[in-house]
Length: 105
Image (tube, rainbow, N blue to C red; front, side):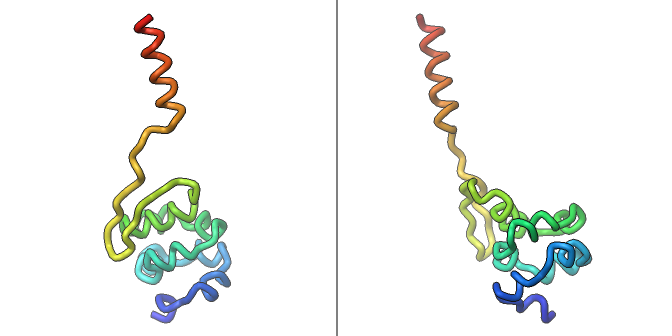
């Protein structure tokens, strides 16, 4: 119960090895999506597959945001994830245009 009230400074003090030994059921209850989003990259990589399997979609999205900060994900931490931004990369658009021009000529 005390762990669910941890603030950013306290979360920063948790070692990755300590995170990896928390039981999966306890991990899912103790860390909400807001706290998971405060993890460092090293802490996030220490989350085990068993811990990941019991997380909610919003908690998983928060973890993914720590692991892949370069991807845009719109998240409403009040309860629902709106998922990743769905758009084509500029490279795909250019290659598609080039293929179309080749086919038409």
